[in-house]
Image (cartoon, rainbow, N blue to C red):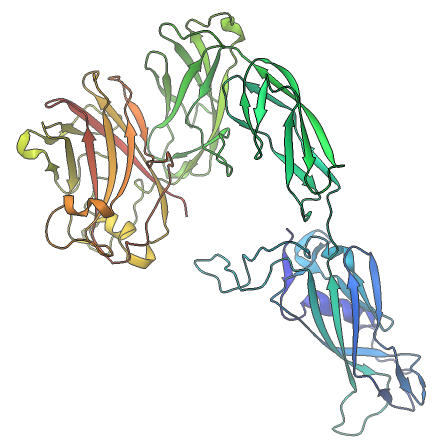
Length: 587
């Protein structure tokens, strides 16, 4: 939607339009601008109603106005124009000469007529849009609802102006005025057509067919889907396609409101050996994109996994080749193999690279591809963009000694301690086996899990308290978390790591000592490890697989927050290394 300039009063551009329309002041004194009789306005209030998308329309501002008993003629100056609009409506405008800071209004005045470009209201009026996202006071820099529709079915302008024919007024006498109440109305937007793209889907993969009606603001956007051959694929009411077998068919998308409007596109379901990058970011619809945001100051990890053709199976180990489109700034640091799967670990550089992008590409180097020739296995790419890692530059603490946290797991800051399982053999220590600097080594206890933390009870020195524990200020802030880990031996059972944000106080929370008592109010994100002794990237998710964690409303008390690392399933005496921690704030 275009940028709006007019809110409750006339814009500078609009004033200029009016003045230009009536001759303005740039022409200097006009000796012929005078009249023997005054202006007489018998109807000080007039009304008019226009409809959007009807082109340029005119409203006679001088209709019914007389001078000397005759309709007013000759030079007439419409001046001192005041305009207001109801419902906090934001009037459409267009850049003047392509300059965004110089906007053109849909209103001008010429020869005593209000000239209105109704086509400019095309995307700003609607008979069916119930959106209310803006207009109210801005909160955290974002617009808020105000109780009025952003795109209403009608908008009313009140235009008050003076009429001057050059008659000499007595001292103290003011020019006569008139008020125009102008309604601009929306037209019903019916469906004119449907757009959709052909689909080519790998057998067994998820896919959603996106179809939209034209125009986008049509009042009945609902569509139905139908697959011609359901032995190839089926489709639900949301356009989600379930593949059944290899083959070709078509999908017909039809307007629910107007069944005469439809489109038919091709659908191909195919099967072959493929490799895919499995930890790309999801788009706004929850579907996999070809993008990934990667935090600065730590290694970026892209996971690859093979999928065999239908009826075939994976066999043996697979090796991959990784390439960077920018080796100077984002070189490949390590090509890691996990048997079938693999990870490309790339360097991201420091904070100066935030905003920079590169492409990471993976191809299959070797492995059993069944009936698909190795040379026919397509390489896959992801576009990675570096974003700020809060652990790189955590900010400045109010305490003169600064924060007392181990931001990148280098075994620095406050002492690490075991808070669960320490009396049963659990331990935490520094290790020089690391991706960079040092790493944190955790030895498992015989308890159900081992948990460690840095216990910093000074809020000014506890970075987590200053980010997540500020009560109402922190509520709603959203983050993602990741860390690199390494096991000493290949586990025989599943090993899980929980990233737990533990608030000391929260609404209806416990009092008194004890970290375990706080777990019901904690923010817990988890990741399950691959059975390997290679370094692997853990990108934490909640129970629903969502990577984003938001400070909850019950954290409405200014409090201490502790980051605990909880290890489940690791046999007693076995160790795990943690290194290169990343926290990305999303809002």
